[in-house]
Image 1 (cartoon, rainbow, N blue to C red):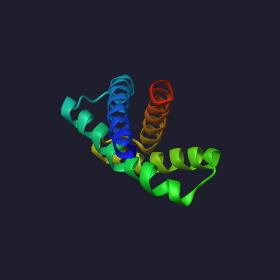
Image 2 (image 1 turned 90 degrees about the vertical axis):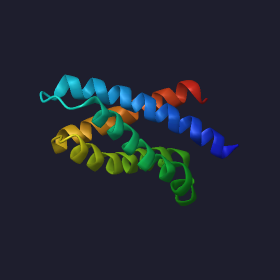
Image 3 (image 1 turned 180 degrees about the vertical axis):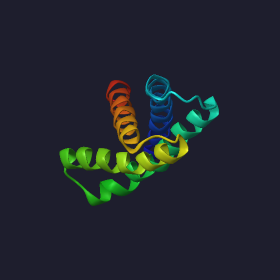
Length: 114
């Protein structure tokens, strides 16, 4: 049951964050890149961070509020270098993109998985 819910959340996260990533990139980055790089960056960043958030962090932090804060900081720190290197962003852009993408996936999660 938990694994099935994780896979649904992973799909929703990858989809929502990749869509937001497209919008952010085309709004704030002047140099064009192939679409597949944006798709791969969205998949790589989410798929690389979400398992830790679902399977590792809950065993370390039991308080829900602390878990949410630590989880988002942790995920942002994991996704930021992926976006920085894969999309050739500035550090500031990588932080902004990661935070905004994660906020979008939190909203999607609250709407569809409550």
